[in-house]
Length: 180
Image (cartoon, rainbow, N blue to C red; front, side, top):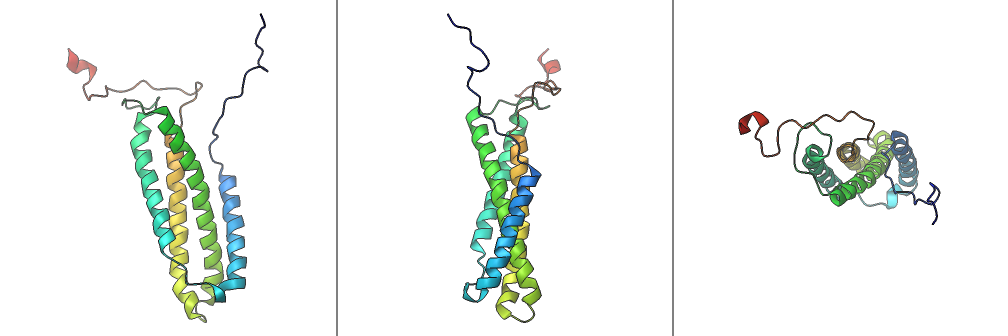
């Protein structure tokens, strides 16, 4: 009969919260890359498309809806609802982490594009038409980062050290005083 030691235990997978420094690094790298690429290849590029920005905006809206739906159902929240399926929460948390990096990349690319396009928009007609796309892209990218971070936060389970408040009321909307 052997005794199990802490070394024998398999490490459990964890998902750490997204760091602001990671997102800032992604913005800087993609921004610098976009500025260099657009500066080098702008004459050979087609006009900046609106389609990807619409897709990114839709992803942001879906993540806002998911965060709004999941947040009150997590354990330790002040409102008592039926719990959410744990696998769904894990999938949403992974989606949120990936989307925050995607939003940072979109923001960086659009900042880099705007940094090259805005000074040249008075001389180059194509640049003048691409500036609104780049500026809207910055806004949409920031919105995706915000939505993803909110969803990530909504998926967090309170740690054992944090003070967990007992639920208020019941999930069916009936208070304990109404039951007699």
